[in-house]
Image 1: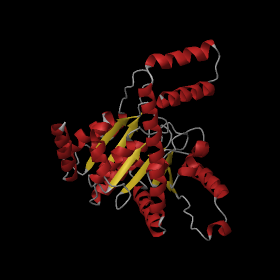
Image 2: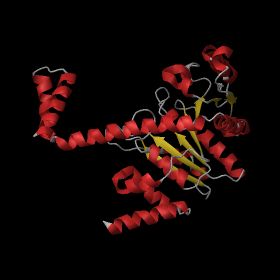
Image 3: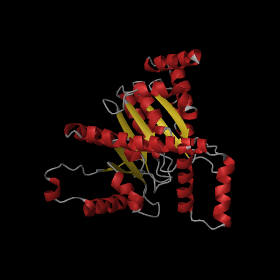
Image 4: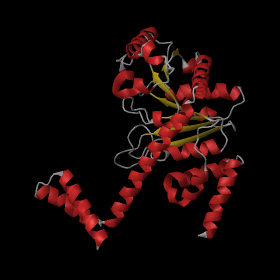
Length: 330
């Protein structure tokens, strides 16, 4: 056990010194066997100080990966390092994932100032993988100036990214058949910056106007906003494939981050994020301990009773917890 611990410690030291191979090995442990590196992860600081975490979400076909590649290229021209965490959907049958974002971002692969990590969602809802938070924390500890997280791309339910990144970009594309898609299931509400990508296509201005109309409807009045300054999401037109509008997007990102710093909102965001992560870890740990308490046969028996005796699922849960309490008293 001691030898294994020393090996992990060396990996962590290598991460901080810029060893990419050590970083890759450590991230593999984080994804596949978090318990092996739990102590090392606990030593890492919360990732909300000088490093900027940017979340990118939006429906399939909006050009998120191409936009990220263009933005990363701009940051590299400015001498900044970038880590990209790209979450790809997993098969509900095999658990496998194509990891296609790695293919689309391959033009950046030879740049030593860029690190790309693809993750399979592994059945997690909300657009992220279960270990995305841990991976981002490791990336920040590795010293990258920017950490960009791209969600799966389901398009309408991916609001978890707003709990992970203080800067959330929602990407839309004209001609997708629904100009108000960003407003579905809270996507518009989580946006710090709205991007209409593929603006070289017809309908870009119409899509921008539709988004602006929705923002105007949801914008607080001056009376509501006077005591607490409100950030109104700007709408940026880009054509990532032509690298147009990328400078404007980068400036909007910087402006939003300065706004968070000026008004002390990064601290508030960190508190909310840590609270959400604590609750997630608590549920995950309690569920794991519950499953360790009962055998697979006992769980199968509960399901059979629900079917045969038509027991309500909530009542079955209550009975299970009562049984658990009885075991503890014994």
